[in-house]
Image (cartoon, rainbow, N blue to C red; front, side):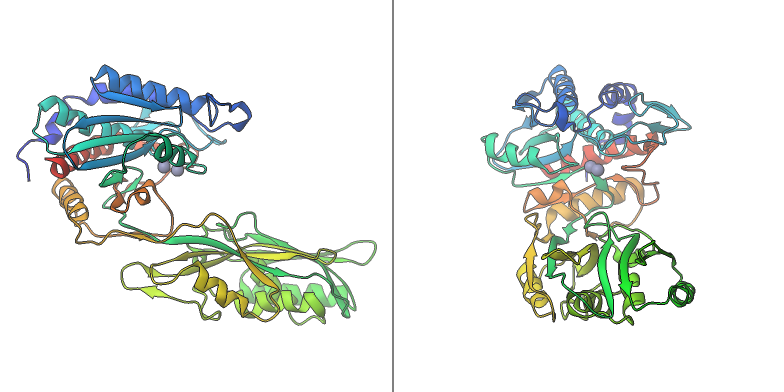
Length: 470
Ligand code: ZN
Ligand code: ZN
C-alpha cells in the first residue's frame, strides 16, 4: 500500500472540508412533490443541493455535468476502466424532535448536527475530499473516476433510472457507494412483497367484520384490530384476553359498541421488516387470540392462515420456503399489512421477503399459491434481486485492507436485507461512512456525524480510491 500519509493530507484540508459541508447541509433538500415540475423533478431542494455541489467541484477544477437536475457527475483521471462512486444529496424529511435547526449545521462536543450529516452529505463530502487529495497531489492514475450525485435515493431511485437512461455513458466497471457503513456491505438480499388474496364472506356463529393491522410492508405491525359479532360473552372474552396478554407478553384491549359489535386490539412492537424477529407482530398474535372462536367461510381461512402458517415464522419454514445461502444467509419474511373487510371481495395479507441468491420471487409465489384458502398471489412491482460481490473480488479485498490500515480493526464481509446504491453496479458495494461503534442516527431527529470520524473516512476514501485507480 501507498506511503502517502493520507491522514495528514486530510488534516491540511479540515477547515475547507467543513466549510463546503456546511454549505451543502444548509440546503433543505427534502423531496417535495407539491413543488415538483419539469425543471425540478423532485422539487427545488434537491436541485439546489446538486447545483451547489457541482459549483464546488467546478471551483476545484473538475469537469462536471448536470443531467437535467436528476443527477450530477464529476470526472477525474483517464483510462479504459471506470470506477463509479454513487452518493446522494437528497435527505429524508427532518421531522420533529430536533434540539437544533436541522438545516443550520452546528458542531457540539465533536458532533456535527444537521439533517444529512451522516446520510449522506457528510460521507459524500468526505469521499469528495478523498478524491481531491489524489487530484491535488497529482498522483498518477490509470483509470477514470466517475463521481455520481443522486437526488432521489431516499424515495424511489428515479434519479438513477434517469441517469443511466440519459447520461449517455456506459455503466462504470466497478464501484462503491459511501452511503452505509464500514467495513463494507458486499451483499444485499433480494426484496419482494407478495400479496395473499382472500374473499370476505362469512356468516358463522361468530362473524369477522374487519381485521386490520400494519402501516407498511417493510415494518412489523405494531398493533392490529378486529371487529367481530355473534355468539359471544363480552366478560368471558375480556377475561380470555387478559390471560392471553399475560401469557404472550403483549397488551391489548376489548370494547363493545351499542350494537353489540366487539372490537379487539392487540399491541406488539414494531421493527424493521428486514429483521422481523426483532418485533412482536400484533396482527399474528391477534389472529391467535381469535382462532378458537366459531368463524366460518372466508373468516375461518383468513384467521387460520395467519395463526397457523404466518405466526412467528420469520423464515417461512411452515410455508416450505425457508432458504439459506452460505454467503448471504437466510431468507426472512415479514407479514406486514393485513386488510380484511367482510363486504370486500378482495382482502389481502402483504408478505415482505428478503431473500438470498438461490431462491427467487417465482419460487416464493408458487409456494404461497399452495396455501389452503388463498385465492391468488400477486407481486409488488418493486422487485430487487439479490446482489452479491464475492469476498475475494479485488474491489472487496482492496477496500477492506485500506479500512484495516486506517482503523486497526479487522475487516469482514457483510450482507444486509436493505438496499444501497452499491447494487447499481454488478461489481458494486457500499463502503462507509458509519464506523462499527458509531451511533447510527440516520433518518432520526438530531442526526449527527462525529467530526473526527468524517476526517478518518476522508483519509480512507482517499487511499481507497487511489488504490483502486492507480
Ligand atoms: Zn443514504
Ligand atoms: Zn437514507
